[in-house]
Length: 175
Image 1 (cartoon, rainbow, N blue to C red):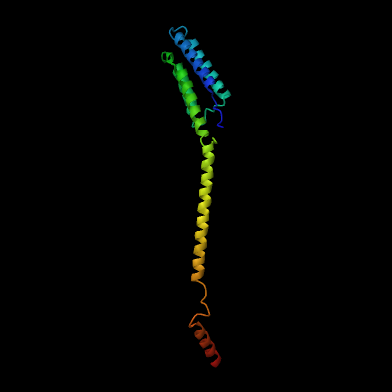
Image 2 (image 1 turned 60 degrees about the vertical axis):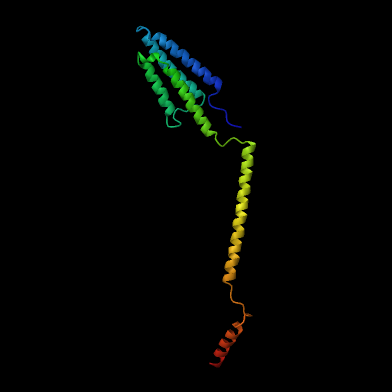
């Protein structure tokens, strides 16, 4: 079985819904200059709240080169700019962090799911390796036998071999 994602569908939906609510309130607060400090305060609370929420879900901001930390910081900085904070940057940041987390989860679970097909493929691979090993062993034995036959000492019963040996013996005794 594959491991459960860090952020489930329900949690992701709640996060995006909360981010949309915060962005809506910030849009209304940014309409008047008098309520702008409350909008900035809400940005600070949202940044801390979502950081805590992602941490409780097991999301690491620094895993994957810190892209999630940069995404969250960019969303917070956009929300701190007075006129630009009317844009849904908090929602965009939350959606991007969720997407990055899901991509990391998918990459980490590749190859870990055991299905009947993977079991069959593994068995086929083992059979192929065993077959190759037996072919290599038989080729090695055949090569060794050929080399032994090539480098074996000459047979004493071969024609001409006895004459050479006896001639060398006679030459050594007469001398």
